[in-house]
Each structure stands twice: as C-alpha cells, then as structure tokens.
Image (cartoon, rainbow, N blue to C red):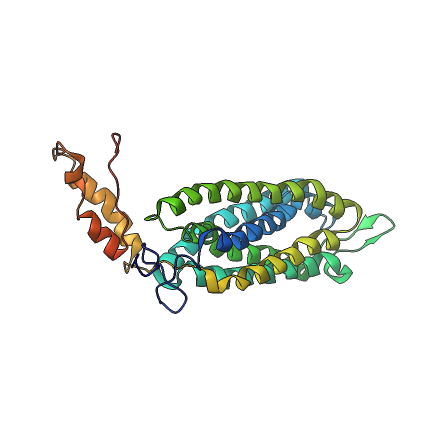
Length: 292
C-alpha cells in the first residue's frame, strides 16, 4: 500500500476505498476541525458561564433552584458523551455520529436563541413585580438546553478522535504532527472559552440575551458548513471489531487471569504478531514500556 501512495494504517474514504496519503488527512483536514472546536466551545461556555444569571433574572427562579438546574444540565453534557462514544464505536462510526449529533446541537442552539429572544417565551414584569415563568416557557427553555446536551454527547467524544484519525501512525512524520494537532486543539478550545467568558457574557448582559446567544449560534452554523466542505479529504478508520465494549471488558478479565505469568526476558516476545502483519492489517501494535 505504501508504494501506491496509500495510507499505511488502513484508513478509507466515506465509500470505503483506500485513500492517498498525499491528498487526504493531515493538517489540511484538521484545520476544519480546529475551527469547529473554537466555535463549539464559544457556544457552550456562552451558555454555561452565565446560565445562573439568566435563570434568576429572566426566568425569575430562586438562586438555589437555578444552581441545581445548571448543575443537572452540566452533568448531562458530560455524561452523554459516554453514550455518543459507544454509538460511534459500535454502530455509526465517528463521522456519522458527529454529523447527526452536530445537527441536533445546532437545533438546540436555535431553539435556545429563539427562547431568549421572544418576549412571549419569557415571564413578564409589571411595575417591578415579575410573574413566574409559565409551564410552557419552562418546558421550551429546558427542552432547548437538553437538546444541546444530547447533541454534545455525539460531538464531544468524536471530533477530537476523528482529528487524530487524520494522521497515519505508521508514518513517522504524520505521527509527530499528531502531537502538534492536540496542542492546537486545546488552544482553540480555550480560545473559544475565553471569548465566551469575556465577550459573550458582556453582550448578554448589556446588549441583549438574543444577540449573546445568536452570535455563537451563527458561528456554529458557519463552522459546520466549513467542516463539511472538508469531507472529500477526511480519512476514516475501519471498524475491526463488532463490540468494542466487549473487548474493553475482556482486558481486565484477561489481565486477572494472566497475573501469575512470568514476563519474557526480551520485549519482542510480548508482541502477538510480526511487525509486518500489523502494517498489512492496519492494527496498532502496543509497544513495550518498562512500566507496562
């Protein structure tokens, strides 16, 4: 495969065909992903960093209820990626799981922006006395929030690993570039959070909540458009197991069974196959370290 210019790790395009290393992957593909991460983090922290304030000043919830509701939503955002990762590894793959989830994420952002922009979806105040939010207003607002949580479940665990798939571990140069990718990935993530915390919070409180949520929504839509422009040059890992969860469970079971075995004198005896077989099959070789 290497002589024909294909990637050595067995990656394919969306149609399952081997991809050329010179025309796919690497930074020309990951630039789209890094841009998306910046806008997604800006959208998320634009909501999370000022959500308690919105619940207390706009929906007129008491402080204790507001903090509890924000914690519940934040917990959901960080739990749903477990489900999203499982669906990607077992059924749809990273690209399609991200595709479906990102659309759900955007729908949630649009609903949330609509909620904070329309007066009919917020409780009214007369002579300084504010009414409590109606059941419809509460349901609409929290439906949009938890729609975002569902969408985040499929985007968070898959976009960064999909970026890692764009680099061939069997190519020393690309393997080195992967380290740089994660550095820029974290930089874009924190940059998006910084913009949200400094700029979006100010806009929400001084220029309007609709504008404060509308800006990251438009940014997210734009970043997704750019992401899908890069579809022809993306690399996709081929699923080599039916149930990753079962394989994961087998690891501690096998380790426990082999706990009394003696280690060989030479590290090369730890490998299951010859090096060439790993290259031909596209499987990754677990290299020996003094600790593990």
